[in-house]
Amino acid sequence: MTHILNKQVSQKKILITGGAGFIGSHVVRKFVTTYPAYKIYNLDALTYAGNLENLRDIENQDNYTFIKGDITDDTFIMNLFETEKFTDVIHLAAESHVDRSIADPLAFAKTNILGTMVLLQAFKKLWQDDWKNKRFYHVSTDEVYGTLGESGLFTETTAYDPNSPYAASKASSDHFVRAYGETYGLPYVISNCSNNYGPNQFPEKLIPLFINNIIEKKPLPVYGDGNYTRDWLYVLDHAIAIDKVFHTGVNTETYNIGGFNEWKNIDLVKVLCDQMDEKLSRTKGESQKLITYVKDRPGHDLRYAIDANKIKNKLSWEPSVTFEEGLSQTIDWYLNNSIWLKHVTSGAYKTYYDKQYNK
Ligand code: NAD
Ligand code: TYD
Image 1 (cartoon, rainbow, N blue to C red):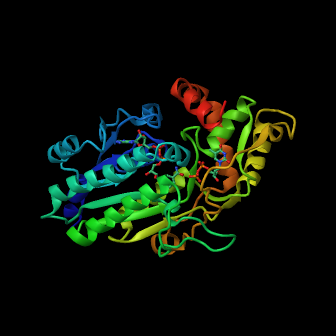
Image 2 (cartoon, protein in one colour):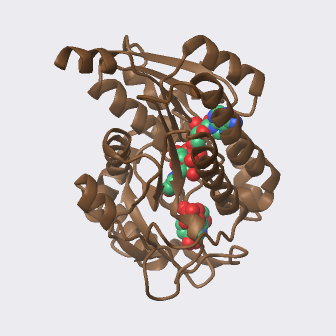
Image 3 (tube, rainbow, N blue to C red):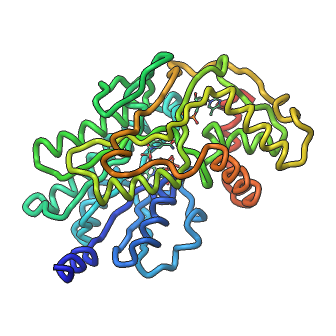
């Protein structure tokens, strides 16, 4: 019995998409280092958000292969699946930033909807006569549920009600994954996670953007009145949750993943400013002076908050890091990785920044 199990484990060939991005790179590292018997393939198109510098420490591991490619290229993807015969997919590749989705919604439909369908088609074509020990894991977001008022939490049964083009594209991709399960019996699992933060996040999202601006003493552009609420989870805890869901989640089920950690943007920004002042040996209150209220994001969702009790109770997962610890580690990482930050904020980043913040 043990022998058969081991054989199944060693035959696992897992395709992780978007593994050069923020969350994907932490997931790739976790799987490569925790499961030496698995073969891990990281497929990434290396868009502005993909960066192989995120994976320098594991790139020479025997069980790791990087493949540069686009999930929307159906001929390439079909050939790749036929050649490599991946037993499992952990799908993270996406366009992921709400502000960019407002500027260019079609790019989000293409990658997030069409790209997911191309992967589903390839997986189906390869395994439809033999679904045993196969799994398609779709990594999604809590933004599919739309917005909450001042109270309440998103559960796995909350109706989808996406507001931004990003959220709509992710909601659509979730529906297609479910439809392939219902229609073709494709073995899938989905998780919907709250806002992540941590090392390697591209400085277009709130926390790394503001860390970078504080370092450079640039204005901190708070949208609207700053009274928007998000539930924050440290990225390594998300990677641990993905490992749990992949290995012990039940097919056709959804798992909400969150930090039990709600913050109003403006309160979070003030804590960030204070921690940064301390670490940079600046006078307390100096960075808060950089806070600048700017024009609101169109269709800005008021509040996201996740009820993560299902994954906590059924899969024994809960966040391991407090927000204060996670934020402190995140700031330290950015301060210690100024070359990484310099690389990703050069070139095209400046064009994006100037356009987004009307410079
Ligand atoms: P990211 O933008 O940092 O990384 C996305 C990665 O996908 C990049 O490496 C990029 O090169 C790659 N990619 C984009 N288009 C591609 C294509 N056509 N073909 C192949 N690769 C492509 O995103 P992230 O924040 O790491 O998010 C990863 C996943 O997790 C996404 O599916 C996102 O919806 C989901 N998610 C993110 C958060 C969050 O707070 N960041 C929260 C919940 C869920
Ligand atoms: P973001 O990190 O873009 O994640 P999401 O929109 O997916 O939740 O934004 C987090 C919150 O911070 C959101 O309410 C928008 C706000 N925000 C700002 O106030 N200013 C900014 O420059 C950015 C990027 C975000």
